[in-house]
Length: 510
Image 1: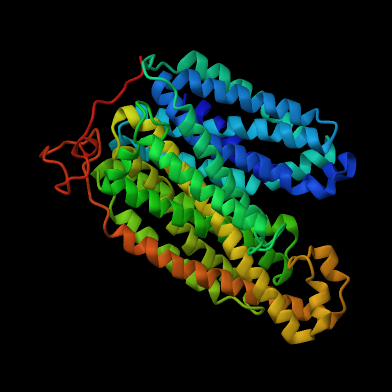
Image 2: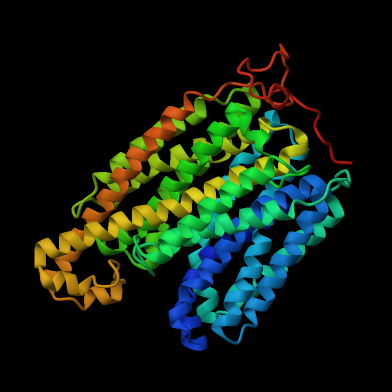
């Protein structure tokens, strides 16, 4: 059963990684270069917007049926994406695929949350971290191989046999109590939340790229997002079955780890976006090798996640991991900010390993604490909220750190080579390795220094932002994990929802 759940998790994480390497080939066949970014944006938008809705539906109508539905939607979107005959069709089918993907991650987390007590859940942390490592490293390699040998359509068709295995295994093996909620679905809340999340994701996607940050489009999206979310908060306090129950945020631990998850996503996705660019431009790595050079970070994450899971299972203690993880991420980001044009691959690998160990302490531990901080009836929305905020953190991290990177690269180029530098970086501060080789030596050397300077800014700001997460980790309270022996049932003493802090009955497979 765990194998089938991990396949579903892999499908969701692998898809964005596997598509990137095939994009030039897709554009060559379907055209539509101007709409290229929407192939990724449509998927990301649908995933983010649907994540909390899938979680709530699972809470209301039963986890298994909703999870199987999300897999089916994802596979339908995959099949249609593979058959797309135009860029418009591909974008639409990718949105459908993303809609299903929103239920895959939260479904896996919520089902494990239902079946496995938090005290015992640590043993699965290593497996989840391993799936993440496989997706990040294997995605580009698999995408390139399939595109070169079978054609780009197979990057979508490959999901079908894997998804079929997951569907069959989960249908046959997973047994969960059936539910039927008496309340009505919160359609207004779902619509408002979708609009608000969509506006936020579009701001982070378009800001500084499609439109200037001060443009009417970006300001308008910001206003739409703020108004939608404000009305959403008003509506959620007045419906019987809110799509995102606000009472879960009254629990101090849940709010803290959700904020830490947001900051972790901000730093993690922001940094890993620019590490390959630094490796290819400054250290001269190939596109394939730049993926393999991330192995120290991913291995550090995997090993520490295994250790953290084992210690949590044996002792029931977890507070040390957010603190240590926050410190290691802070240290890793600061060390990466020291890289320049002379930094060796070995040195950068050591720095990345430190960052990876920090991620290993935090990635699954924050989800564990979030799930332990909500009642069993809110396991779906608790899991989806933690996932959503980490996703939004990643979106903001890539956008904001990307804007800092672009600005620094352009300033450095202008400083070193004047108007020639502005011409090279006009429209974009990123050049692919092939274009870089065509530049005159003096401009190429200036661009190398500019990228190193831009990376320095990204990692330095990432370190500064990591301080907030490190400080927040100290305020996480060591609440007994469900499944552990409990000496007292007095709650946490802060008046923030004692029922959510006390161990609750665990739903067993039948």
